[in-house]
Length: 289
Image (tube, rainbow, N blue to C red; front, side, top):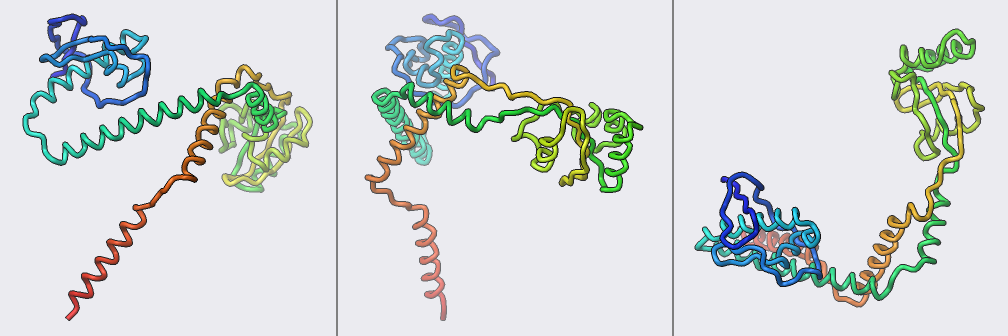
């Protein structure tokens, strides 16, 4: 199928070849659309409200508006070739309309609830403090050498402690671990990113010290602490968008749970297999001589 492109937006705009692939509609709720006609194809008008229902960004982005309008125009052309609609397609269309209405009503209700119950600055600050309590306090700059056997690890450790070989050179030559080609350098790591067994050893080291072997799933590690520092802590303003989103989602989820407690909810998905099994058993009994 040849794709079509409409340009510019005006009455009697001619069709041009090339352009956008046909795509399915993705509905998004918006209240900003105005009753403005954008394009008319075979006497069917495409409005700004319809375009924003597909992609809310079209309200302020001319390129998005044009792209979505072209997609809708293609759909009008294709839909116009269908003269007999199969019953199952009508059912899907009806179901889609129900879903779209429900989605828009739910989004409107969610927006209304959050507007009536805004997140407070005290909630934001409390959530920030909670997040900070879980943030790592220290970072470690670590190298490691990973080998397959305890004997190999002991041999490497002895050579390093005696100063016979450089840590990075041994890592390049013998390590089977991560970043071996970089001399075993793991860079800055935190309590959360280091394996627990490695972290337990690294915490006890002074800068420049080497220790091991440490048993890992993939072998045995020799580690070197190159440096350590206090972990940078993000500010409240840096985390504010993330925190507000988390709090809004949590508030909305709690509101939905409250609604669910007073609602009548029947799980028909569990009943259907049981009913089907009972019917099958009854049929089998009737089939017996």
